Amino acid sequence: MNYSIFYFSGTGNTWYAAQKLKLALGKNHVSCYSIENDYLKDNLESIIEASDQIIIGYPIYGSEAPRIMQTFINDLPTMKVTKPLAVFCTQAFMSGDGANYLSDVFLKKGYHLMQTLELKMSNNFYVPVFVRAFKVGNREKINRRNEKAHEKIIEFAGQIRQGEAAVKSVNDIQNWLGDTQRKHMDTYIEKVNESIYADNTCTKCGMCVKLCPVENIKLTDKITFSNHCIACMRCYQSCPKASIQITDASKDLDKYPRFKGPIDKFDFNVLKV
Image (cartoon, rainbow, N blue to C red; front, top):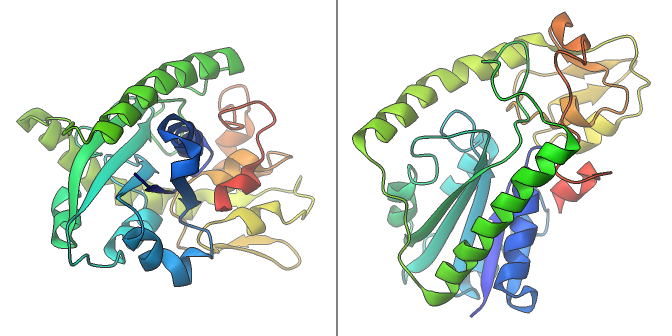
């Protein structure tokens, strides 16, 4: 069996899960791509056609996929013969129905949802404009969460290899929770767009411009932000000087610590390949 993983990762958690899943499935049988990878522009359909099953991974943003992943899913080629699909999500706590809610969209395009997985990992969205719960943990806590996630990923890989139907059942309360969170997520993203800026400690290194998945950041005589930020938090978390702020309050790094990736000395550049 040949598998293709397509993922989006804002700050590394979903990247980590994708790499572990690739190994658990047998790396010689798996292609793994960030949806930011330019290679997919001309080759996505052929990759999917050559795959026995595709797997999609994304972080949960208020019980929904990030906007960039929603666009990717809406642009998936329609299959003439139904293709099995698995979805995994990373989240700080719970999403309600975040791994399931797009199942009808997938089905209309010819992808049958066979397996789902939700992974509790470290929060990367502990900022002043959002509900302040689940503070970014230290490296020891992050490692513990990664280990637990890895155990679930191994089980998930086994379900995929066996062709086992393992879609998370979702009750009415979870559907309500998901719908409620999705109704408010646009408001939070708008708040980030209104609040984000680079302060006077910025060295104009250009890292944020290079890393932004939606080309929302420009560098001229200073760093400026357009209004289509998707709140992936990549620039905010990766800035080497912690110069990118979401309101002045985020300058307090003790109160609002930054998430520096799922592993020690994480290179944020890997998120684009």
